Image 1 (cartoon, one colour):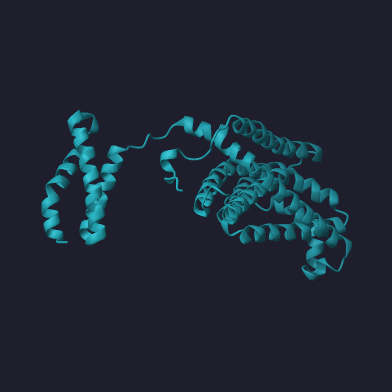
Image 2 (image 1 turned 90 degrees about the vertical axis):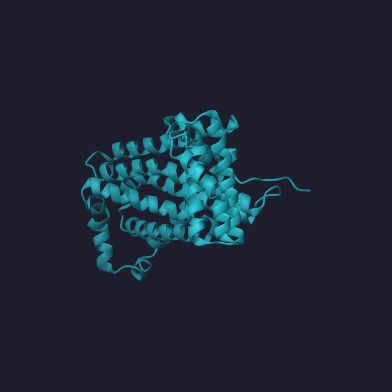
Length: 333
């Protein structure tokens, strides 16, 4: 294809399209709006022809910019709406967590069972922790380091660090879920760390301190990790067993969109967990008060998911993107 001849033939159309795009939409007449749509479609066709027959870089770049600008004018974004944010927290997020409930529960039970087993092993044999820590490190951990950790930085800085770290761990679980193994590795590493520290504390008769500090924030914090890991494993399972009516690509795409909803929704929940860990866990409040605050935050999240997510499920709500934004699927025989 002669690129110069093609540009000379269709240049007036592109120029006219630029002219219409340069004018405010409210000042375009009905006929000019129709012309704008027609020229946009023709420019998109021209771009396809150039890319397939003679991919001239300069012409391709120019037409790409023109088509993208025209598309934005023809199908403008509705802009920010608070109703969308409200629906996200009243429907989309709790619904997706509720739908993945069995995966999250299974992940949580497995993690707790493994951590408990490791704690019992470490606490039951004094030689086991010495394979990972020196006696000096064990003594420091039991006498001061475990408790001092929560006061190792100003509360606001510590809370921000905890929030970002937990968000990072959750993001890893969600993003790598399609591969499955990274999620299991993250869970294993955290279970081993918890088992080792917990075993050392329990084995040295500091069970009350260990549980008294950990449970305050850990109930909500670990639940968020279980949700992220459960949804991540659900994404991985979607390509292993996509079901009889979907291809693997369709199954992973749908599960991935669900994972994105959960990832965004966990951000404020992890923020609450970080605030509790930074300001409540190391506070001078009586242990029963601190545990009550942690339990209330945890039960509030579980109740929110069960009630709001369950209602959305019963009403047949969907957290997926609108149909025009999904991949096109044609029936085949």
